[in-house]
Length: 374
Image (cartoon, rainbow, N blue to C red; front, top):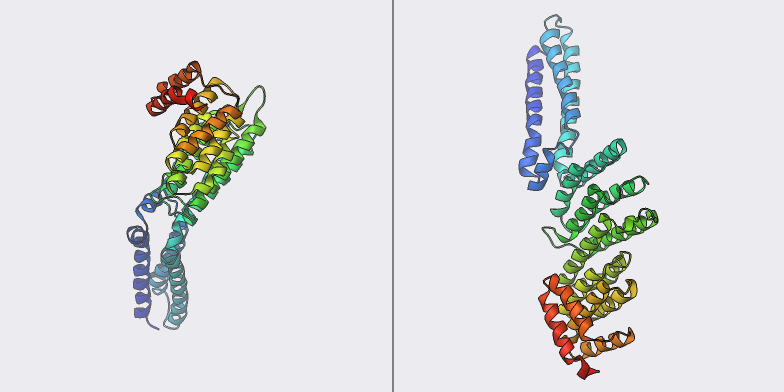
């Protein structure tokens, strides 16, 4: 074993090291989707620093042994130096191959790894400050919007659920904080405002989380602080309605009982039930529409707001066909509601203020023909 061999080892080691320096860039340009390239700039890929530090130490050892050790070594010492350098080079090569496996072969798992890293960062920041970091939540939202339906979206949902559980376990959490609202909004966007249409399973998973949040908020409500009426609850009501709209468009009608079940936990939700009922009628889902009509009167107090939405939906039933009109008339009689000019005009003014002119026209048309139907 001569000095030429040792110099060759140094040259190959430097080549391997330089290759490894450019490997993350190669992975970003070829293997990663555009959204994950943005995430990688935030150093969410992890692990690169330790690999490079270890390889740098090994390379320096090889260089020092070859260029300084050989100057003072005799010909009998060269085989021993060659053996040491060879072992160090093989160790360096093994680490490089392992790094190559992590970066290339397992590159398809980057999204899940980034989600897990962000989840841990959020939990760590929350333990330190008692606040959910909105910047990290924004990154999770980005991953959710651009994720594929199914497992990828499920990973984002599970991470957000874990973050929510940590926040809700703290009795001092401000339940109407902007961070909590952002989590609720991110859950919706991950299943109903994505690049690909959301899957039924993912939507059910989010609605189930919403239900658990509402139950938790309800358990924290008191006469002094009724958090069930807070901003977080209103956000859940809005997001649940949007998920219901998306599910009807995708023909996931069997999800609607869960949607109604979530809304039953929210006081004053007759406006959203009214909207869902109209969507159901427009898509010929009459069973859903009848359930919504009954739900409006059964779960809210009978105040003007609820009656206005109820009568508005009744008017849409009235012009959805003879059978639907018969059902609407029966519903009015069962609830002991008399159709009078004053009651209908009050409901019409309510919907007019919301620029719901179609409902206003149908209320007035119903009033004109209702006496003849009784």
